[in-house]
Length: 220
Figure (spheres, rainbow, N blue to C red):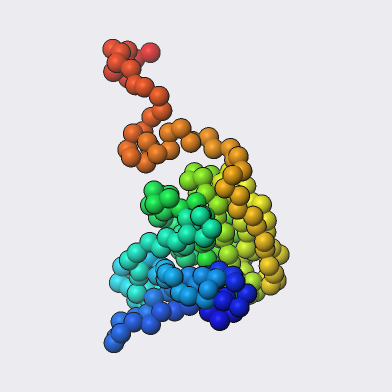
């Protein structure tokens, strides 16, 4: 917090947030502004684990219960953590709340070489593709930050609203990635005309027609 104030930088800091008594802590992100103040905290909502809550994240953490929206220089931002990426519904909620820049924090690292081979590094195939799809589908920027600790399954990267990765670090190496968020830039958005209507449950573009040949779907 002191360093954020000194450098006049916003910081998103991953940590655990302690609760009271025997309650397990949260897996959290503290949002620290450029004055060194905590302005919000996100607690991972979808922790890994089974319904018995005796393995994965749920063995050690409590699930969170809120979305986290804050604003930096007029841009509405949101945050998510790791396994949250498996739930597209979270991105839709953030979109409806006006979020246009998502900071999605991961710790997909410290694997053994054997485990990466066993799973054929499925995370390197799924995470970038999913982030690109969510960026394009919701027309938002996404910062997908991963640990640089070996063995990480993929390096940190940044995606623009067209779903294009515009910057990426080297795998297993510490680094700094600087990306520009320009809200005045003109990005291709194929679903701009109908996205909001689809979110509200209208699952077609244009105007529907009434036609007897439309109702019969078992003949040519």
